[in-house]
Image (cartoon, rainbow, N blue to C red; front, side, top):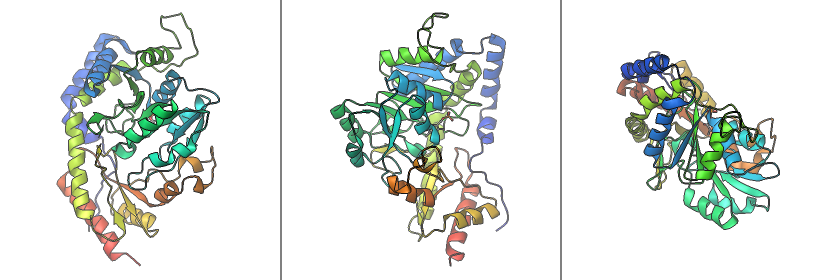
Length: 373
Ligand SMILES: *Cc1c(COP(=O)(O)O)cnc(C)c1O
């Protein structure tokens, strides 16, 4: 097979497809002279709130800030414990630690890679204040049992929706099911901007008001600072560009689902590779298409694909609980430790062509079938 060049995610085809709209948005912002917050951000917030079917959307600087500000707006602080998954990006736990609380890691359901609700009750103590489920790879965590546990114990629920804009749980948009949802617009996310950006969604007026204060140095009115906040305002340019992409997000997510279906069709029933499981309650938006490779052959396979010019990634090679900052033993979350050794994400994005898809599948088949043992 000849060498090709397929990155795991290529932002360029989206830009090409939307170039006129993108350039018009840039020009509008440049000509407006309003570069931070302002009408462009307000319009984006309204359109996101509308799309998600939620009362408030607060534009922020990043997904990490959306988690930090979301936690603080929900009243999480020093001395509290927050239950979350260790199979996520560091920022989920980092945000919990940065507000002075302690992340308590609960293992995943090995089929969905998301927090296993059945394991949450045993992790609850009198200090537990909140649960932060992550909708990993674009698939919903199992929210109903999580909400039932939260209700029973009086806990807040902040959904880390950084990877799942437009994804659904039982027909409800992710990030609107718990008390608040944190979103990221990092360029590689399924709704990606052209720089850093984030957003907090909530139906709670008090939480929204607090988030708006916290993003602007704890001031409701300029120069009337009431608390220690952050400089975490969304840029007008990001908002204008995200408004363009938001108009196409359903098409993009549908394209991702079609690509996932193609992969799954061709990778089902093969030894040593397990395609992703789509839970019946979830509309998966495939921020990542992630397979499991068993028998310790994952790294070898990734290497074989790289030699053919096919990009893959491991999200995440080291579970958060085992990262140097937390340094907990692997057994804290055994399914997570196992998944970290087996997962491999394949090229994904709304504009992958049929030819490219075919060559990725061929590359996988060649490596799996002919290079074993
Ligand atoms: C990307 C990501 C974040 C952080 O978002 P940033 O915008 O990069 O700060 C948080 N949680 C998860 C699960 C993510 O994938």
